[in-house]
Image 1 (cartoon, rainbow, N blue to C red):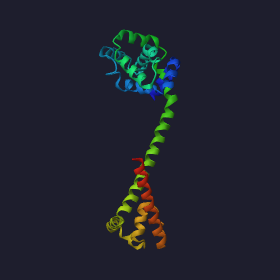
Image 2 (image 1 turned 60 degrees about the vertical axis):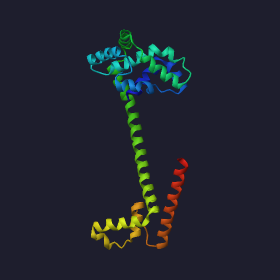
Image 3 (image 1 turned 90 degrees about the horizontal axis):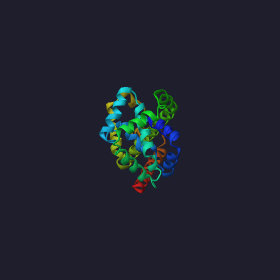
Image 4 (image 1 turned 45 degrees about the horizontal axis):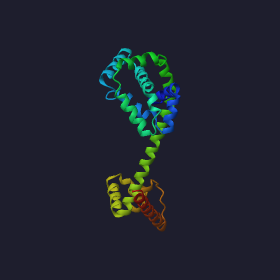
Length: 232
């Protein structure tokens, strides 16, 4: 969320710089993400880091993080707009930030030049972007769960193709250790294997239909293997 907030602030204050970074395909978060996560540790010289930390501890909030990052963009923006590709832009900004030895100038630029960047404004911007971030995280979680489910089914199909007898024996063992009342249901061992593969309790009682289903599963395994081999 903070990275989206900072990107909006950068677009507002440095439109020419952001347009150049967009042209190069550089996202602001690629460089500034580590700044926020490490609180500039190992990103700035130690004297500058300690000066920034003093203000952070005194104010008791994250405002100084945003102000310092904006100050760095202001100090090194003119050099960034001369870069020709994404690698040069990222490398240049990282190297220039690491050579910021004038801590007094950095803190002065941050505190005096960006007084309108305060806790209230950051809170409003966070609320603006939070819903989009939550929606993106939920969508990614759904996609990951769907991928895991598909991988589980593919693994069962593959194991069934490689050693169907073993799966039938495993099903028998599970049945023997389970509730004895299921023994009266009349389903065959092959039915139970199909249930474990498809999750469908209604497999049908026609033998040739079961054989067709098994054949289709084996063919699906073969196609999955071919696709996997092609990707590798």
